Length: 459
Image 1 (cartoon, one colour):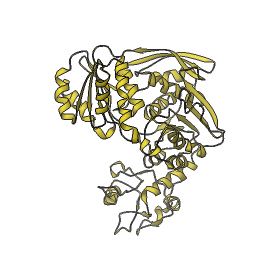
Image 2 (cartoon, one colour):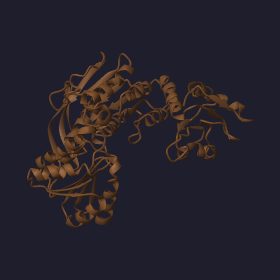
Image 3 (tube, helix red, strand yellow):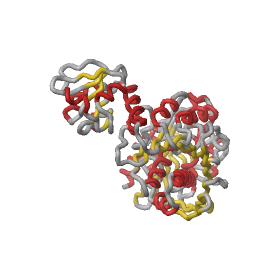
Image 4 (cartoon, one colour):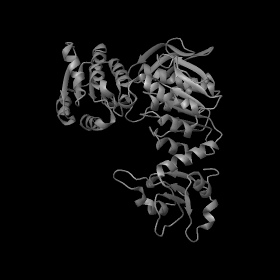
């Protein structure tokens, strides 16, 4: 990390640098990186131990030194340490302080991806497009919170020409803190959906919380907005340049959207005064929207239509997010990483386009506030509208999905269970060749076990 010497790190975190005997010369040595996981320590890294509910990272400081760490942070005095350390009051706060100082000296554009749904998928699409021209650093997985974002910033190196970072929040004030760290030059806002309602109350609250980021952008910053979203189409960007994308005649738009089975989606993209046909190797209209956002970012950073098209056609998925698994002639849509009403309906729409029988295995959606039961109940209409054949629900809240289908005399064959184990006992025997199975729930439902079981039993 250029210019981030131990002395400068100590200054950034307002800490006390302790140099054991023989380590005095290390004061002016730069750290090579910063991590909070001792298993990821590399030579000359700074180790940042954090105190969790079950594990105290301070117990692994010596292990970090044995793996080549240049130094460590610590919230307490260490006895006979193997290397230098910096005493701070709060290592989590110190991480943010380090990332903030480091970001201020970086001279590359940072693209921040924000929204209720689709942040990770859009981030991956943007990175795929930009990688056709630039060396790109992107958020790993969904490391998008007040620990994950600064760790991502600390991974930026001299060879990187642009960074694409995901920024996720659940309460007011968090985006101020993330924005102050990332200081994005470009912000992409995917949508304002119904999630984190437990704290943000309603969509207006979500919009207010997410747009806090605008106060931390440069005056020549650009905001790329989903123009099809009613909240974003009129969003106040504090005078920052706006670019709109969407399916309804926006500046960056798409028409003639055609599903090519479960593997791809074809569309004609309009880019300013240019246009091109593209086949995105992912199913669903929502991935066309993600592609339009990536197109707008690519255009703003000077990519040609051919470069953008190539990047879109090389885009892939990450585990747990609309990951298509084929076992013989059975298809599993592994979308079990997270869920809210918007993403649930989008995944059901993808399932509805599948040939053969369709089976939805759905679990509870979290953090929906006081309307959580009503929002689960509303999923029943999406299942019916997309002619889903079988529905297996698990969880207290997901019982509302089953209730919705029962009360409307839906043609869906709906079954509800209190546990994954009992659900699988009924699901596995009915699966046959040609079926497509969607597995989706919020992460706390641990539906990864459903996908794992299906793969083991059907493989």
